[in-house]
Image 1 (cartoon, one colour):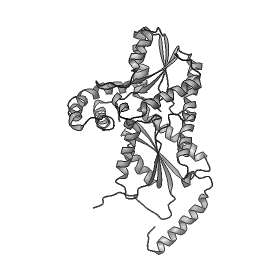
Image 2: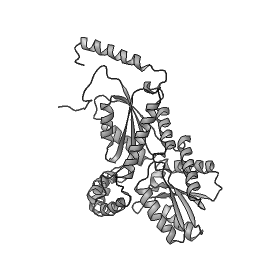
Image 3: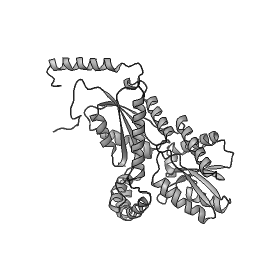
Image 4: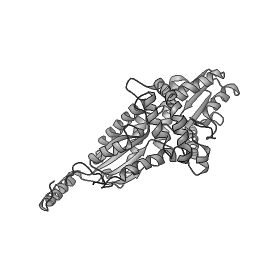
Length: 372
């Protein structure tokens, strides 16, 4: 019985490759109740996401949540679904293609392969890792597209990678980008996108930085996410030269009845319109590397309605960085910085000589009885 998997075909003269796994949260295969039930089962069944013992959570998940929530979520996904599919997936594919082009353009970079993997749904992280292995990756760099670290996102991505690699006979060298909430390239791209929006659409009276929420107890148990979100917002406000009182931080997408990180985005936009008299509000979501349900339907849809119903005139959502050239530039630079010390990232490496050495190695292996 074969316990561990391996590359389908091995040759002694195969050129080792640096693999890059670009990971994001995921998306259902289609905006239907059946597809959402499958997706939510995987997502909400992750103990990193819902830190409640199975004996308490699973009766709620299977007895209530998966019976009621998929239909409602499917309707929400239909609001943002495009002719080419899920925006998170199609944007992710363009981001990966852009990263690949930038690495190809750098003559100093050696052989590499770049794949997209989703923590939940398809293409899965396991599938992406298999493709990297078949491409010859002996070193793999994982880039989770979460600028701010959280156990629920980056930590869960590590779990999925480790779970797959536990099944491999030849485990590759592994590195992982833990966070990039204060990376200059990421911040500069956000600043440019905000300023471009203001030049094109006009500037609101306030700027709201809305991040995805999580239960308050995760912060109290040591998760750095809340602090990193505030640092990102502060650094952006400094770069934009925003005066005190003209910007705020809030947290969206809460789920369940327990207390989550505050202030809540929906309550904040209502307060700004009803209590502060703000008529024009700009909202940007720096924690999302690609537009998705939470930005397109929740912010640009639901929260826009809350704001207007409370007396506001216009809530303008500033799109995520998506596949903007400066965003993809920043991601490619981030990859190369974290790959320092690996042969494929070394400018001095002579890859033609490396191919000759591998051919000599293959010849010696064949003399010892190897087939390839």
